[in-house]
Amino acid sequence: DRKDHSLMTTPCSTGRISLVGIGPGSLDHMTPAARLAIVEADTVIGYATYIKLIEPLLDGKAVIRRAMTEEIERALEALDQARQGRRVALVCSGDAGVYGMAGPTYEVLFEAGWTPNSNIEVEVIPGASALNSCAARVGAPLTHDFCAISLSDLLTPWPVIARRLHAAAVADFVVALYNPKSGRRGEQIVHAQAIFLAHRDPQTPVAIVKSAYRAKQRVELATLADLAECEIGMSSTVLIGNSHTFVRDGLMVTPRGYADKYDVTSGEPREGERRGRSLSTGLVGWRAALREDTATPEVLAARFGLPEAYLRYVLSEPTSV
Ligand code: SAH
Image (cartoon, protein in one colour):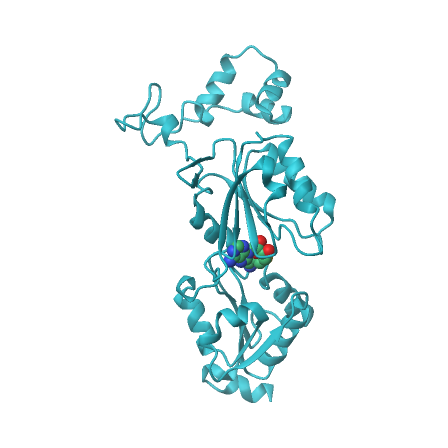
């Protein structure tokens, strides 16, 4: 019983739930820590497709295969097994914390009265998420600020998703779209395209990466204008470039800004810029320029696409040394 278990000193005395991100799919891209958690587990629970990807590690283990929408069942099952003192690996593709099992599992655990002090140990083991793997397959598209948005409206209302797409498009983020399309959800990607086209050039580079680091991998480079015509499915991630992203020799690259600050042939900083220092248009330089400007905060706010209250704040701030 529970009391006896807690008095034993071997690690098996308490149950354990490892939320394991297995990476994109190939065993080579799984971290040693993820592999160890699976190898040490008594029970492995996961979506059937992911179980298949890690088959070589499953010898002699109890394996529970679950279907796509049974996330809560998977978490409850893990809890049940861990209560019996077993070591459970709940496997997810990519990272368990990115549209994965980590969140639902903690919710189920808290609901069941679990706390970090109770005798079921819970850990999240990070893995390369689809955005990392898919980016690696096309070049360097995420080298500047980016965000991830899931187009799945199974748990999120569409206006919430549309608002986030709009905000990301306005703010010029590179965007990774997870769950872009499925058999039953075909229209969302068309709407996402329409929202982006309102703010970005139709020629903006787009990459569709299907099944990165798996047998059926397929990489397609396209433009925002043809996004909706591309072959996209459940195992695809869509990467949309920002206004600086370019494609050259089949590689999609988002510059970090080195070329703006430095002369790329000589490596010397351009006029007005200093190595290791903020840009002349960084916070301090920008604020100094604002103070010379005779325009009203309202006009400045419109010029920079920032709230007027923020412009007033900047102008009223004492200058730091
Ligand atoms: N936890 C996962 C994401 C799960 S949501 C992660 O961190 O990657 C499922 C979505 O992830 C898919 O619809 C697809 O958009 C993306 N995805 C997962 N694995 C992928 C892969 N190998 N190649 C391309 N996209 C992938």
